[in-house]
Length: 167
Ligand SMILES: [Fe+2]
Ligand SMILES: [Fe+2]
Image (cartoon, rainbow, N blue to C red; front, side, top):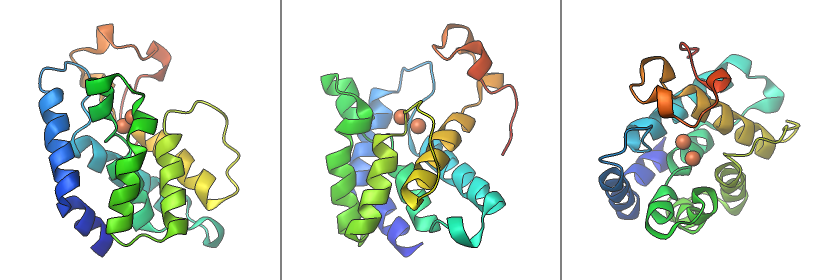
């Protein structure tokens, strides 16, 4: 996890998270700070561990990188009204490159960040599609709807809310 620990200490990562936590300090709905990012990383890792086969093995560092970077675009979203899945890509790319991820690894992680809000059916037959599907599922499962005080006015449809924990 050397590269992930490098990412966690990268000044641009820590500054962006600090800014994000400030921008969401009065938000009553789910927030997107470090605890959310780590919840997603750990849930995705557990899911991957459970269904792991030699064919679909995904490096844990790639799972953590995608999870830690997927919502950084919330800062430009709040400040400039941009969609966060695309607005966060330039910073995500810079951080991955600074932390030593290869071009191939960067493209797998950036794809997951870009499509983490996608609702399209995913045909998981590549590492890129597998990581994308994992991030989407873990992001949803990370939300504690069952004990959320703002659940009544949340935009999530009732049937999609988490009524308990799976991981
Ligand atoms: Fe998101
Ligand atoms: Fe998220």
